[in-house]
Length: 310
Image (cartoon, one colour):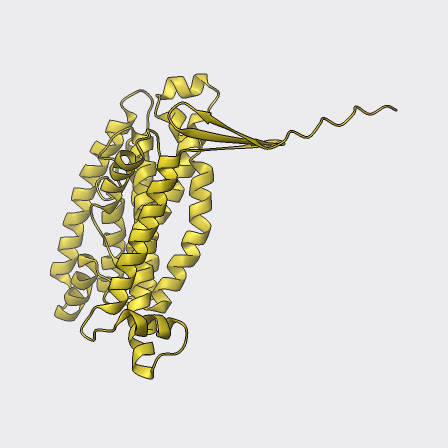
């Protein structure tokens, strides 16, 4: 038995392509990246750090940045540790996680529907999560975890309903999803309002506070489930969204390129719906973030496509 000689190892080298795109070659792997995209990501990460530092220092009880850093390193007083570690830090982390989840969810749905209005807060998934949470608060009187589970269930059920009503083929499927989602969202908003009229004063107050969407009541028991959910959902969403750029070319074109259109739509839709529902369960229905994230990202990095991860 003879064996073919091993192919010579290709030394790592870099090639600068037009448009300031750098492609690195080395062995069997290549990496392509754009300096502008890297610069935007670095600047946005720095902006998050600055805003986070301001969030940890400002409030009713103001703390200098030096005391915040000392507290994070375990050298703060009891009061400083309570304020920074128990009150402000969970809210900051929850805001970052929920915002990232909503932005990724909006990018997936807008790319799938080929419609700039195809975000979960427009097509009804956020309204479904809100209706599920209010139903639990008014009718079943459960605690915060039951409300979160009901919100996730309501969002997933709404996504299934919109998908069934808008099912079909052709170039107008994205527009059908948006139109059906707007109609379902209006119905769910009416149902939520009816439930509030049938609730007691205490239940209506509790539900209304949740419907406004706020970080005031966020603590570590809220952050931990959201972080665990995103640790699973973000890799799944990224892996399931690899064919979204082909879907943006149109269903027939994608099918001609060998893309399994049905599976390429279902898996990202389920993952993105779960992202939106998990965020809504943690902080309530937050509007506009999912709608604007993809448009802002495209303007900053100047790239087309889904941009689930720049």
